[in-house]
Length: 175
Image (spheres, one colour):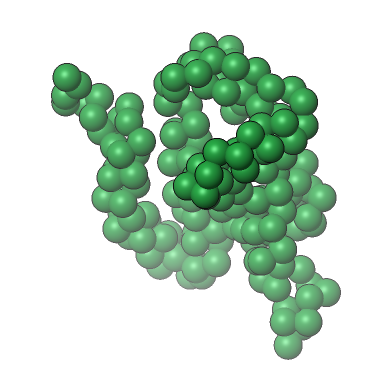
């Protein structure tokens, strides 16, 4: 039976609990930075990127129970669809959310990321790095090109969702 720190830092439940407990701290950091800097957008984006990305990457880098590499695009997605609705939600929606905070807040915080192709490039590189880490660290996880595709797509969709706040040509940004 596991106990102590392992329950908090080396299980998905522990990651979720620590993340939820950290929410007030994240809010206080945003508030403190906003007061100090006299504006709220950048502090919210900075904290949002970290708070919205770190727990997902932390979960991805927890040890798993199946060591496998899948470099054929869409192969794992087809097996997910055959596994049932719960697996579909966990695998697909979860992978879409991994770099969604980076995609949403990145262009708001960093002018260099203020285009969807740039967000896609950064998310793809980050996702490939995480998948490579799973393999190199021998975490008994599935290292899959489909995860890279879904992580990247999630960041791109999130960037589109926040576009009105970072794109000067956006109708909402002009008014």
